Image 1 (cartoon, rainbow, N blue to C red):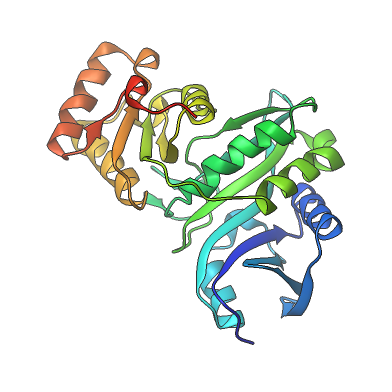
Image 2 (image 1 turned 90 degrees about the vertical axis):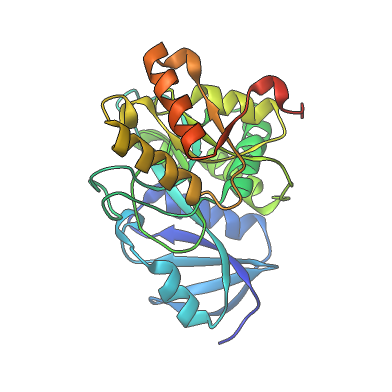
Length: 282
Protein backbone atom coordinates (compact mmCIF):
# COMPACT_ATOMS: atom_id res chain seq x y z
CA UNK A 1 0.00 0.00 0.00
CA UNK A 2 1.30 3.45 -0.91
CA UNK A 3 -0.47 6.72 -0.15
CA UNK A 4 0.43 10.40 -0.12
CA UNK A 5 1.93 12.24 2.83
CA UNK A 6 -0.31 11.83 5.86
CA UNK A 7 -1.14 13.18 9.29
CA UNK A 8 -1.72 10.10 11.44
CA UNK A 9 -4.43 10.01 14.10
CA UNK A 10 -3.76 7.14 16.48
CA UNK A 11 -6.38 5.38 18.57
CA UNK A 12 -5.13 3.12 21.37
CA UNK A 13 -7.58 0.23 21.79
CA UNK A 14 -7.04 -0.21 25.59
CA UNK A 15 -7.94 3.47 26.13
CA UNK A 16 -11.71 4.06 26.37
CA UNK A 17 -11.46 7.78 25.68
CA UNK A 18 -9.27 7.10 22.65
CA UNK A 19 -11.83 4.66 21.25
CA UNK A 20 -14.61 7.17 21.99
CA UNK A 21 -12.86 9.88 19.97
CA UNK A 22 -12.10 7.46 17.13
CA UNK A 23 -15.71 6.29 16.93
CA UNK A 24 -16.98 9.86 16.75
CA UNK A 25 -14.44 10.77 14.09
CA UNK A 26 -15.80 7.87 12.04
CA UNK A 27 -19.46 8.75 12.61
CA UNK A 28 -19.10 12.49 11.99
CA UNK A 29 -16.97 12.40 8.84
CA UNK A 30 -16.84 10.29 5.70
CA UNK A 31 -13.75 8.06 5.54
CA UNK A 32 -12.41 5.49 3.10
CA UNK A 33 -11.16 2.17 4.45
CA UNK A 34 -7.93 1.26 2.64
CA UNK A 35 -6.15 -1.51 4.55
CA UNK A 36 -5.46 -2.90 8.01
CA UNK A 37 -2.83 -2.27 10.69
CA UNK A 38 -2.45 -4.61 13.68
CA UNK A 39 -5.74 -6.19 12.63
CA UNK A 40 -7.71 -2.92 12.67
CA UNK A 41 -9.00 -1.04 9.61
CA UNK A 42 -7.02 1.96 8.35
CA UNK A 43 -9.24 4.89 7.37
CA UNK A 44 -8.31 7.87 5.20
CA UNK A 45 -9.97 11.24 4.74
CA UNK A 46 -7.99 13.84 2.78
CA UNK A 47 -4.52 14.03 4.31
CA UNK A 48 -5.67 12.45 7.59
CA UNK A 49 -5.23 8.76 8.31
CA UNK A 50 -6.91 7.09 11.29
CA UNK A 51 -5.05 4.08 12.69
CA UNK A 52 -5.81 1.88 15.71
CA UNK A 53 -3.07 0.13 17.68
CA UNK A 54 -3.27 -2.75 20.16
CA UNK A 55 -1.06 -1.37 22.92
CA UNK A 56 -1.40 1.57 25.26
CA UNK A 57 -0.09 4.61 23.42
CA UNK A 58 2.31 5.71 26.19
CA UNK A 59 4.53 2.71 25.50
CA UNK A 60 4.25 2.57 21.69
CA UNK A 61 7.83 3.69 21.06
CA UNK A 62 8.66 4.21 17.37
CA UNK A 63 5.09 3.48 16.26
CA UNK A 64 5.50 6.20 13.62
CA UNK A 65 8.20 4.13 11.90
CA UNK A 66 6.04 1.00 11.97
CA UNK A 67 3.07 2.83 10.47
CA UNK A 68 5.23 4.55 7.82
CA UNK A 69 6.59 1.17 6.72
CA UNK A 70 3.10 -0.33 6.60
CA UNK A 71 1.60 2.46 4.49
CA UNK A 72 4.74 3.20 2.45
CA UNK A 73 4.30 6.92 2.97
CA UNK A 74 5.89 9.90 4.67
CA UNK A 75 4.20 11.07 7.86
CA UNK A 76 3.91 14.78 8.62
CA UNK A 77 2.79 14.49 12.23
CA UNK A 78 1.12 12.26 14.79
CA UNK A 79 -1.96 13.02 16.89
CA UNK A 80 -2.65 10.56 19.71
CA UNK A 81 -6.26 10.33 20.90
CA UNK A 82 -6.21 9.78 24.64
CA UNK A 83 -7.75 9.82 28.09
CA UNK A 84 -6.52 12.17 30.78
CA UNK A 85 -6.45 11.20 34.44
CA UNK A 86 -6.00 13.56 37.38
CA UNK A 87 -6.71 13.26 41.09
CA UNK A 88 -8.78 16.45 40.95
CA UNK A 89 -11.31 14.83 38.61
CA UNK A 90 -11.90 18.25 37.03
CA UNK A 91 -13.52 17.90 33.60
CA UNK A 92 -10.86 19.04 31.15
CA UNK A 93 -9.89 18.73 27.49
CA UNK A 94 -6.14 19.03 27.09
CA UNK A 95 -3.41 19.05 24.46
CA UNK A 96 0.31 18.71 25.01
CA UNK A 97 3.70 17.79 23.55
CA UNK A 98 5.46 14.66 24.74
CA UNK A 99 8.81 13.56 26.12
CA UNK A 100 10.70 13.31 29.38
CA UNK A 101 12.90 15.98 30.93
CA UNK A 102 14.27 13.41 33.37
CA UNK A 103 13.39 9.76 34.12
CA UNK A 104 10.90 8.10 31.77
CA UNK A 105 8.28 6.88 34.24
CA UNK A 106 5.46 6.55 31.69
CA UNK A 107 6.92 5.54 28.35
CA UNK A 108 9.49 7.09 26.08
CA UNK A 109 13.15 7.37 27.03
CA UNK A 110 15.03 9.18 29.79
CA UNK A 111 15.85 12.80 28.93
CA UNK A 112 14.42 12.54 25.41
CA UNK A 113 11.78 14.79 23.85
CA UNK A 114 9.70 14.12 20.76
CA UNK A 115 9.49 16.94 18.17
CA UNK A 116 6.50 19.14 18.91
CA UNK A 117 3.61 19.56 16.48
CA UNK A 118 3.22 23.08 17.81
CA UNK A 119 1.09 24.73 15.11
CA UNK A 120 -1.49 21.93 15.15
CA UNK A 121 -1.40 21.64 18.94
CA UNK A 122 -2.02 25.34 19.53
CA UNK A 123 -4.73 25.52 16.89
CA UNK A 124 -6.49 22.47 18.35
CA UNK A 125 -6.48 24.21 21.74
CA UNK A 126 -8.21 27.23 20.18
CA UNK A 127 -10.77 25.09 18.41
CA UNK A 128 -11.48 23.10 21.56
CA UNK A 129 -12.24 26.39 23.28
CA UNK A 130 -14.78 27.08 20.53
CA UNK A 131 -16.38 23.65 20.23
CA UNK A 132 -16.49 22.95 23.97
CA UNK A 133 -17.93 26.36 24.81
CA UNK A 134 -21.28 24.96 25.96
CA UNK A 135 -19.79 21.87 27.63
CA UNK A 136 -18.82 21.41 31.30
CA UNK A 137 -15.14 21.12 30.38
CA UNK A 138 -12.19 23.39 30.85
CA UNK A 139 -9.65 23.62 28.03
CA UNK A 140 -5.91 23.83 28.58
CA UNK A 141 -2.41 22.92 27.57
CA UNK A 142 -0.42 20.51 29.65
CA UNK A 143 3.34 20.82 29.79
CA UNK A 144 5.60 18.30 28.08
CA UNK A 145 5.42 14.86 29.69
CA UNK A 146 5.33 11.06 29.14
CA UNK A 147 5.94 8.77 26.16
CA UNK A 148 6.04 7.25 23.69
CA UNK A 149 9.22 8.13 21.83
CA UNK A 150 8.82 8.97 18.13
CA UNK A 151 10.78 10.76 15.42
CA UNK A 152 7.85 12.66 13.93
CA UNK A 153 6.23 15.80 15.39
CA UNK A 154 3.60 14.62 17.86
CA UNK A 155 0.85 15.82 20.18
CA UNK A 156 -1.67 14.25 22.54
CA UNK A 157 -5.29 15.42 22.74
CA UNK A 158 -7.17 14.13 25.76
CA UNK A 159 -10.53 13.82 27.55
CA UNK A 160 -10.30 14.05 31.32
CA UNK A 161 -10.01 13.87 34.08
CA UNK A 162 -11.64 10.67 35.33
CA UNK A 163 -13.40 7.54 34.08
CA UNK A 164 -16.83 9.17 34.17
CA UNK A 165 -15.79 11.50 31.34
CA UNK A 166 -13.75 9.20 29.09
CA UNK A 167 -16.81 8.03 27.19
CA UNK A 168 -18.50 11.44 27.07
CA UNK A 169 -19.79 11.73 23.51
CA UNK A 170 -19.98 15.54 23.40
CA UNK A 171 -16.36 15.85 24.52
CA UNK A 172 -15.30 13.39 21.83
CA UNK A 173 -17.26 15.32 19.21
CA UNK A 174 -15.53 18.57 20.24
CA UNK A 175 -12.13 16.91 19.82
CA UNK A 176 -13.10 15.27 16.51
CA UNK A 177 -14.26 18.59 15.04
CA UNK A 178 -11.19 20.39 16.35
CA UNK A 179 -8.91 17.94 14.56
CA UNK A 180 -10.80 17.62 11.29
CA UNK A 181 -11.43 21.35 10.85
CA UNK A 182 -7.80 22.13 11.58
CA UNK A 183 -6.22 24.91 9.54
CA UNK A 184 -2.55 25.46 10.24
CA UNK A 185 -1.59 29.10 10.89
CA UNK A 186 1.83 30.62 10.37
CA UNK A 187 2.62 32.14 13.76
CA UNK A 188 5.78 32.79 15.79
CA UNK A 189 6.94 29.59 17.49
CA UNK A 190 7.76 29.70 21.21
CA UNK A 191 8.89 27.38 23.93
CA UNK A 192 7.34 28.03 27.32
CA UNK A 193 9.22 28.00 30.62
CA UNK A 194 7.62 28.17 34.07
CA UNK A 195 4.32 27.59 35.77
CA UNK A 196 2.59 24.37 36.74
CA UNK A 197 1.51 21.23 34.96
CA UNK A 198 -1.55 22.76 33.28
CA UNK A 199 0.38 25.73 31.91
CA UNK A 200 -2.30 28.35 32.66
CA UNK A 201 -0.28 31.30 31.41
CA UNK A 202 0.77 29.60 28.17
CA UNK A 203 -2.85 28.57 27.61
CA UNK A 204 -4.01 32.16 28.14
CA UNK A 205 -1.39 33.53 25.74
CA UNK A 206 -2.21 30.92 23.09
CA UNK A 207 -5.92 31.78 23.27
CA UNK A 208 -5.35 35.52 22.87
CA UNK A 209 -2.16 35.97 20.81
CA UNK A 210 -0.88 34.88 17.39
CA UNK A 211 1.63 32.30 18.60
CA UNK A 212 2.28 28.58 18.48
CA UNK A 213 3.66 26.92 21.62
CA UNK A 214 6.00 23.96 21.33
CA UNK A 215 7.63 22.27 24.30
CA UNK A 216 6.69 23.67 27.69
CA UNK A 217 8.96 23.30 30.72
CA UNK A 218 7.26 23.49 34.13
CA UNK A 219 8.87 24.90 37.25
CA UNK A 220 9.15 21.43 38.78
CA UNK A 221 11.49 20.35 35.97
CA UNK A 222 14.03 23.10 36.55
CA UNK A 223 13.70 24.67 40.01
CA UNK A 224 16.13 22.22 41.62
CA UNK A 225 18.37 21.79 38.59
CA UNK A 226 21.97 22.93 38.46
CA UNK A 227 23.14 25.25 35.70
CA UNK A 228 24.31 22.49 33.38
CA UNK A 229 21.11 20.45 33.74
CA UNK A 230 18.93 23.53 33.33
CA UNK A 231 20.80 24.46 30.16
CA UNK A 232 20.41 20.93 28.78
CA UNK A 233 16.65 20.99 29.41
CA UNK A 234 16.20 24.38 27.74
CA UNK A 235 18.39 23.47 24.78
CA UNK A 236 16.56 20.17 24.31
CA UNK A 237 13.13 21.86 24.42
CA UNK A 238 14.25 24.48 21.89
CA UNK A 239 15.86 22.02 19.51
CA UNK A 240 12.87 19.66 19.65
CA UNK A 241 10.49 22.49 18.80
CA UNK A 242 11.10 22.73 15.03
CA UNK A 243 11.37 26.33 13.90
CA UNK A 244 11.43 27.72 17.45
CA UNK A 245 12.13 31.46 17.53
CA UNK A 246 11.62 32.61 21.12
CA UNK A 247 11.27 31.58 24.75
CA UNK A 248 8.33 32.82 26.79
CA UNK A 249 8.79 32.91 30.57
CA UNK A 250 5.96 32.73 33.08
CA UNK A 251 7.92 35.03 35.37
CA UNK A 252 5.24 35.51 38.02
CA UNK A 253 5.32 31.78 38.76
CA UNK A 254 9.06 31.77 39.54
CA UNK A 255 11.41 33.11 42.16
CA UNK A 256 13.39 36.10 40.99
CA UNK A 257 16.60 34.09 41.31
CA UNK A 258 15.27 31.47 38.87
CA UNK A 259 14.26 34.17 36.37
CA UNK A 260 17.77 35.62 36.60
CA UNK A 261 19.36 32.22 36.00
CA UNK A 262 17.06 31.49 33.08
CA UNK A 263 17.74 34.86 31.49
CA UNK A 264 21.48 34.25 31.75
CA UNK A 265 21.23 30.77 30.24
CA UNK A 266 18.91 31.82 27.42
CA UNK A 267 21.31 34.62 26.49
CA UNK A 268 24.14 32.09 26.54
CA UNK A 269 22.16 29.86 24.17
CA UNK A 270 21.24 32.83 21.92
CA UNK A 271 17.54 32.26 22.54
CA UNK A 272 15.54 35.48 22.58
CA UNK A 273 13.01 36.03 25.37
CA UNK A 274 9.72 37.48 24.18
CA UNK A 275 7.09 39.31 26.24
CA UNK A 276 3.34 39.03 25.67
CA UNK A 277 3.17 42.75 24.84
CA UNK A 278 5.28 42.05 21.74
CA UNK A 279 2.85 39.45 20.41
CA UNK A 280 0.06 40.28 17.99
CA UNK A 281 -3.52 39.86 19.16
CA UNK A 282 -5.67 37.16 17.59
